[in-house]
Length: 82
Image (tube, rainbow, N blue to C red; front, top):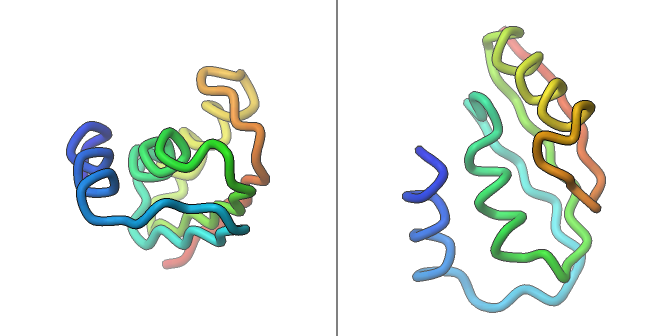
C-alpha cells in the first residue's frame, strides 16, 4: 500500500488508539504503512516490526530512520525474512 491509501484506511476503519501498540508489517517495503500508522497514532507508544523478503527494502527503512528523513519518537525494529 502507498502512504496515503494506508493512512486513509487506518483513519476510516481503526478505532482511536490509546494503548501501547506492536505493529507487525509483513511485506513492509520502504516503511509506507508504518509511517501512515505512526501519523495516525502519534500519541501511542508503537513498536514497529517491519518484515520483508527484500533486504534492500529493509535498508531503505533503516536509512529513513537513521537519517531522520521521518522522525519517529517510537521504538522501531527491523527484521528480514526470505
